[in-house]
Length: 109
Image (cartoon, rainbow, N blue to C red; front, side, top):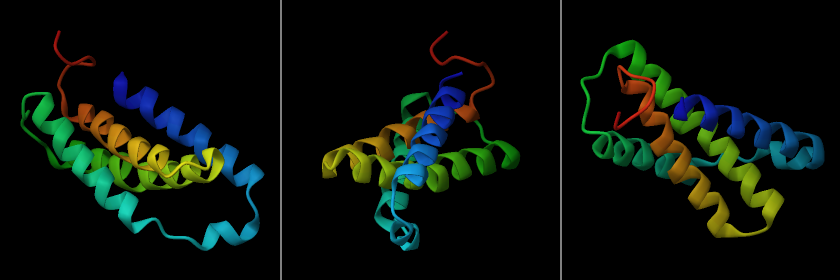
C-alpha cells in the first residue's frame, strides 16, 4: 500500500513537471537522485526488517525506487525551487519502494 501510494505521487509529480517545464529540462539525467533513491531503498529494506527478496519483487522495487524516484525528485526540485526537496523526495520515495518486498500490504502489522 505504501509503495503504491508513493509511486502514484511520483507519477503525479512527473506529469505536473512535464506539463509546466520547458522542453530543455527533459535533457537532464538525475544520476545523483538515482544514487539517493537506491540508498533510500536500502534504508527502507533495513527498516522493514530485511525481508527475503525474490527477483520479481526486487525488479519492481528498483524500477520504482530508483528510476521513477529520480525523475520525481528532479521534478520536485524544479517545481519547488528548493534543493533539499529533491533530495528528500528521492530518499523517502526510495524507502517507500522497499515495501514492495513485503509479503503483506502494510509493514509492521
